[in-house]
Structure formats: structure tokens, C-alpha cells
Amino acid sequence: MDGKRILLVISGGIAAYKTLDLIRRLRERGAVVRCILTEAASHFVTPLSVAALSESRVYQDLFSLTDEAEMGHIRLTREADLVVVAPATANILAKMAAGIADDLASTLLLAADTPILVAPAMNVVMWEHPATQHNLAVLVERGVNVVGPATGELACGETGAGRMEEPEAILAAVRALLARGTALAGRRALVTSGPTHEPIDPVRFLGNRSSGRQGHAIAAALAALGANTVLVSGPTALPDPPGVTVRRVETALEMLAACQAELPVDVAVCAAAVADWRVSSPLERKLKRTFGRAPELHLVENPDILAAIAGADARPALVVGFAAETEDVVANAAAKRQAKGCDWIVANDVAPGTGVFGGDRNTVHLATADGVEPWPTLSKVEVARRLAERIAAALAGQPGPAAR
Picture 1 (cartoon, rainbow, N blue to C red):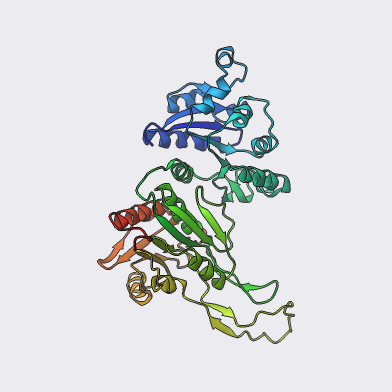
Picture 2 (cartoon, helix red, strand yellow):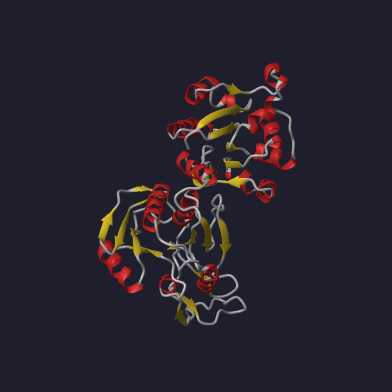
């Protein structure tokens, strides 16, 4: 990020304290950070602490005579490579959607012609309110990028979606949006993520506990290295990763068809937890409960998407699969790599108590033709970054899909 200019808008929410760490991480990577502090935000973090970490003046007043003599709100946006709003409260999202410009932050956001990234943070009820969801949809349609929010315990004591993403995840999103001409520029990447839902009847389905966090993080990391990345995602509650094209599916059959439609690609990473079976003939009407007798479901095997991609005529140069195991992780990973015909397997332990499904951290083993390499316990964002860099190194010097 050397020399990249980030304009950080800090709005008034308790998550504003996280932006201090975000500023530090951006500065460590060579970014130049200028900060806008709203009046409400100054109740949570002080201008002095923000200025000390950014090593730059903090802007607060729209009507500063010195700034406005130079049209300061215009100049600030024109001199930025990226505008980041963190935390993005329900209030500032509403202002952005409605085009309101009644303070420095909202005015410069309306005047910005550079990319914008927002990191929502608010109470779960505010987040789920139709007004907030409508405002966000309007902003996304206009090209605003979104990272988060995460799900978990909120400052108000409630639990649900609305937590601002951690600085590491926001940093990864920033990198993805700033990526130009990097290690995977000109490459095409395909990633699968999330679970699949196999219908039993109109209201029930077979599924699993996958949140999609690891697959989405991998798609973002590949895009951050410049890859033209397509994410085929099963049902998740996650926002689209910045800079990634998303194809949404429900079932394994739909996921396979979507993946095949994207070939050829340079690399395919199959991180989705695809259901192994589906009901042979889903019912068109709700299956009624019969007390004392459980229904019999006839299951058939779903297609093996990883094996299908690894055996395709337009096979990617690198095919990476995932193995969610509850025992014998290393042995099962090595065996699965051979059985599927893929190049690498990323195996993770999802046994009860690990917290991998739905959590923020992961402990993986990378199985290749050279053996099995254990990785330390890392955040899913860091696992994704390391994997993307290994993929870039493996593809270096290889021709693209068109040349093959």
C-alpha cells in the first residue's frame, strides 16, 4: 500500500474505537491516512488520538475558512485513492443513500468520485430494518463497496448481525479495492463458498453449518492480488466481497452448473461445503407430520463438484479443494487429494469445540504432492491471504487458460 492515500470517515458508533487499530495497520503498510471525524464520533474517539496515529491533521468542520477557501471537501476526495467509512452507522448510510450533505463527512461523500468502502456497524434491529437494507441496496447499486457486518455479541448486549468487521478484514477489503497490476493480474479465479440447501419440500431442506466466511475471504484475497474472481456461493448471510463477481445458487446441481459455465479459469478453489446427498424427488407441498411415524426420504448422491472440475476438459492449471474433517485430518486430506484428482487440499478440523463453522479462525493443513504442511491457527482472512499468495507463486510463469 506504499503511498496509497486513504480518506477515512469515522462516524459515531462504539465501533469507532476499532478504527484506531485500522489506522495503525494501514500506516504500517505504507498508506497515507487522512481522517474525517463526525461530531458524534468525537464522543467515542478523540481527535488527538486519531491525529497521533494517522500523523495527520483530523478534519471535522465543514465551514473551516482555510479549507473552504480551497473547497476543502472537494480537495480531500480528489486527493484520495479510496474513501473508507468505518464505522458506517445507520445514520450515515441513510444520508449517503438520500444524498444529504449537512456536515463535512456527508458532503465529501456526496462529492466523492473515488471508490468508497463502507463497514456497517449498528444494533441488529437497526441493521435488519427495511430502511437500512433499502439504503444499503441503493448504495451497492451505485457502486459503493461493503465489508461486513459480522455476527456476534453487540455492544448493547444483544447478539446478531451488526458488529463492524475487525480491522484485519477491513484491511483485506481495502487491499482488494486498491489492487492494480499485482501478482494475479490477468488471471481468472473461481471460488465456491458456503453450504448448499437441498430441498425436501417447499419449507425444509438438507444442509450444513457452513457460514461461507472462509470461501468469501479467499475470493477477496484472490481479487486483492488482481485476479478476475468469480465467487459461486450457496446461501449465506455474508455481503459480497469487494471486487468479486458473485453467482448465487441454492443446490449442488446449481453450483456445478454455475462453475462449469465459468470455465476455463486459471485456478479453482472449492471451499463450499456441498451436501453429499439430496432427496431424489422433492415434494411440491409441505410434508405433514404424522405422529408416531417418521417419514422415509429416498436420498441420491450429489455430483462431486471438485472432482468434476479437476477432471474437466478445460481443467484449471491449479485445482484446490477443501476437506472438512472431524478425525484423522492429515491422513484424510492426503487421501482426498488423490481421490479427487486435485492439486491441493486444504484440510480443516471441524470437530465439535473447534468453532470453525461460523467462527473467525481456522487451523488448516495444506496437502500437496510434496506432502502435508501444517499451518498455525490463524484468522480466516489470514488463511485466505496466505493461500492466495501460494496460488500466485504456483501460477507464476504458467500460461493463461486461453493459451492452454
